[in-house]
Length: 397
Image: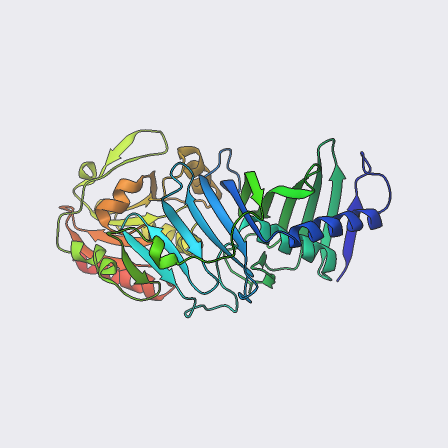
């Protein structure tokens, strides 16, 4: 493996050795951060998007946690407008996520992990620390670029290892995934000259997606030692449920079987409203999906073929983005993945009415009178496909 270092000479004088020395100084400062509070602004992008597909703002309390030998940090996230409204937390042992759709607190103890890492996004300072340490120490096939402007330094790290590389306290090389268009990873970090600390990063999986996190109103080392009880932060009226185990809410979508499908109004790619009631008269496979869901993306070739398989006068396939992405992003997604079936832009109301809790993909098979006849959760190539085809054929008899 080769490692290439490029030092931009615009304002930063000297050699690549000086760039490495500067990054070591930044790393040393980051390692001195025992706790931090900050406002975090995040954007999510899909390849080809002209607008972010998601935007969020949270207030974060981040703690160094040496007892956690996985990511090495604990954190709490609060609503940016109401800092008493708990959203997500990780204490080094479990994470708790507030599912507002179902009014449950989802507890993940990571006992059902299929990978040797905890799949939880580390907090800002932990994440950039891992990236910079990797930049200095790795023997992987990478390109490093460091540039200087009047107020900041800029680091760009391009990783070409043939697989996705991510950071969960330590670098982790994911197994090859079939839905990845290009396994090249690009990380960009902006470092404020005045503080000597990063304030923004961008992560990009080339040809797939990218995300930007930027922190502001940063206060360092002002929090007491980590001493919080995640369960005590769950508001009254929320039920604790263990992730990966069935609970009463998981059964709610299936209880819709043999009942009239809840009506919905979504938007087509011309910007016109389309209602479920206007589509009465044919058997329908309704796919509630989410732009950015890898498993949903894997199902697209099958759904394209399924749309052609049955008589158009008797069958229709309709997919709705239930994650509420902007219409421009939905159009881009359809074009990029060459989707040939009807694909609509939805909102959270369809999640509420169909009781999915935001989980995707879901498949609801409706008869010509818009009564739900079968509900299928998730997608597995082969298995799910047979279930769907058999159910449609039975209904069309």
